[in-house]
Image (cartoon, rainbow, N blue to C red):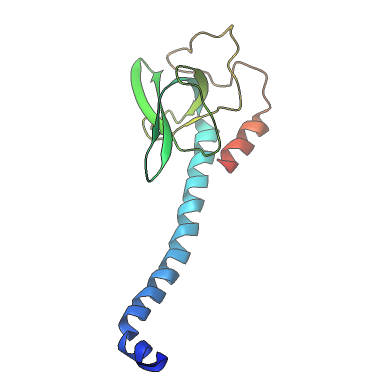
Length: 145
């Protein structure tokens, strides 16, 4: 069988593959833009708290850290899929939370260490981090997350 016969015989398969490539080339940038917008919404209306890293999962599809935090006297559990970080199990990290959807919209702020003088966060969180940090540094981190 020559190449022409192969392409004619598999025309429908090639059309489906081309369609899927075009579809994904449209959907993926839109999904990325949506996630970036979501992170900036968290930045704009977010409050800060403390999360404790409880577990590291190395799974075949994706590795992630699991953490828990308390917000408005309720315990939440979440995950961080940020690549290239080495978090310590049992360690506390700052966290930014969307007050409207804390279970879905929360991001660990691992580049900003918690000083020993801070043991816990208020139940309703902080309006700003309780350490001197330029807000643009946080914004930049969230944009690159």
